[in-house]
Image 1: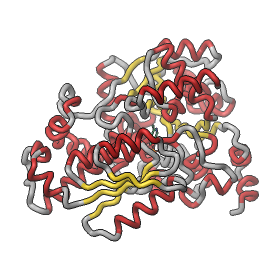
Image 2 (image 1 turned 60 degrees about the vertical axis):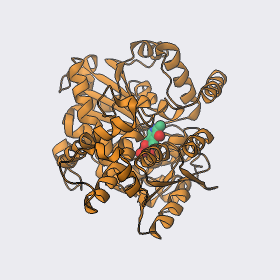
Image 3 (image 1 turned 180 degrees about the horizontal axis):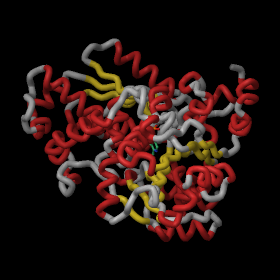
Amino acid sequence: MKTEELEQAYPIIDEMALGHEVTWINPMLAPVAEAMQGISVSEKDIEDAGARLERFAPFIQAAFPETKETKGLIESPLKEISSMKERMNREGCGIQGRLMLKMDSHLAVAGSVKARGGIYEILKHAEDLALSAGMLKEGEDYGKFAGEEMRKFLSGYSIHVGSTGNLGLSIGIISAALGFQVNVHMSADAKQWKKDLLRSKGVQVIEYAGDYGKAVKEGRALAEKDPKSYFVDDENSKDLFLGYAVAAGRLKRQLQDQGIQVDREHPLVVYIPCGVGGAPGGITFGLKQEFGDHVYVFFEEPVQACCMALGMITGLHDGICVQDIGLTGKTEADGLAVGRPSKFVGKTISRMLAGEFTVCDEKLYHYMKELMDTEGIFIEPSSCAAFEGPARLFRDRESREFLEQSGLAEHLQDSTHIVWATGGSLVPEDMRTEYRKKAVLS
Ligand SMILES: *Cc1c(COP(=O)(O)O)cnc(C)c1O
């Protein structure tokens, strides 16, 4: 379809093409029993991924002493942020219920949500290699991966990944810790400090003038030439997706520990920033498995890089990119600077996602500063996109209609809203200062 035809078929795309913020409610959202049909991942796959992460816990604890307290599990706090809620409501957001922050911004090892999927995929690959070479037997202590013998074995293999920044950080750090040769192919908009940090850990960083898509393509081509090489495919990887999905069961326990109920009368609404879709998609799949129809998930994307919304609205998924409707794909939110969405993710969650809010870059710095001022928590601009969800859910016409029609409106006083903070703790002090300056100016 030509752009004009698309815009005629979907008036919302007209707005998106102008770079305006839009609120999209997914007309395909279905009851969970229906939404889970015809997809290629299952609850059992998530359990399998969770069990694998537990097997690797002794290695994680040995390689990353900061995980000692959690016995080698990489998990983040869930924190109520009532001062932030108050501040947002003074600005007219009208948030009802409890506002919470899921602090993947502070995940150990990689300081972003990518510590879930990225680390999981590399651990699985290392396990596969070790098992098939007879270097590891089922039931053995995975602390073995911290030993010299295993490192030497894995150093004969290489990893390639294309990244806008954080995925490269997580894959680079974990691969280097296991002994792999690792190559991170980075787009031009990736931040310099991320490249520097990776190089300091012995990671080969290759830079590309073009966007993220180009970095991925080159990385894939190089990996294909070498049989001892493995390519982490951010656009299609089921393993990444499942690593992210494990978050949901752990979140459920955290909610229980804090005495927070989730059921029909106490709905849960979750807001997650979206790039190519793997992280928010995997988390959504996990949440739907855990909470069924009582959880509603909204994604947030920059107005210039709203690829998942575009792919879902048109049903074209990776058959369309933001440049096709005249957008640039460029945004200050480097973690979300993706022009073409994952088809695997789009199709898998097409009946699970409640909707999307797209957001202008300027607001990201505003939320960043407000969270710092009210709660003393720093998160990076990309992850601030999630705040646009609760900021608009109660105000926009489209989402207000959705609240009424879904029956959510009756239970808002008893609802819980979780903003998924996806990155930040590794951002160096001078970058934080620079961001703060931008926040004051915007
Ligand atoms: C990667 C990333 C996301 C989005 O994840 P995708 O899998 O690309 O959709 C969100 N926030 C931050 C900070 C990220 O690094």
